[in-house]
Image (cartoon, rainbow, N blue to C red; front, side, top):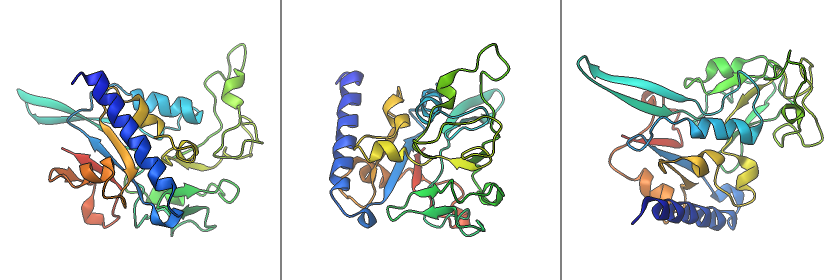
Length: 241
């Protein structure tokens, strides 16, 4: 089967899985992701598309791709590892927040309430996966002849009624920020942007509580691992190696 057909079928199946999950009560869903490191080419399409989808400023990246060197010279190879938020079942970032701005939703996604966040950065320090960043208020076109308007547009994360005001104290500036599995897309029955744009179809997403979902099928593979399993955080992002 041609790769383009296979990709379309997988994306369609994942979208159907999401639609089926949305028919259930929120507390009965458990969103998760499987990333096949054997397919990741290190193209950074997921990183770039995430930045565009979420209007992320300089210094804020929800999904970096780590470049790992494996082996010893001259027998050396490379492996690329996308690293979104692990959406832990037992997230260390939640209990350290002094104002309960970081919390776990009924569907298992760890989210941030920007109106509550005071920018103490305790959660950034507590995350063992370095999956959180801080919004300093910078823009890419700051200091150029013209500040581009698209960088200041509202975002559903911090409220569609708020424009982003550089170097101000208004949310999300001064707040911690992180991956949230594209909650706005999920609400519409769409897969996260990083899944859609992966050229190698290396990402699988859906409801881990649904045994018939593609993500559950991939998460049950014998070659699946999680990062820093010894910490007991129980990530809902799995890797195929």
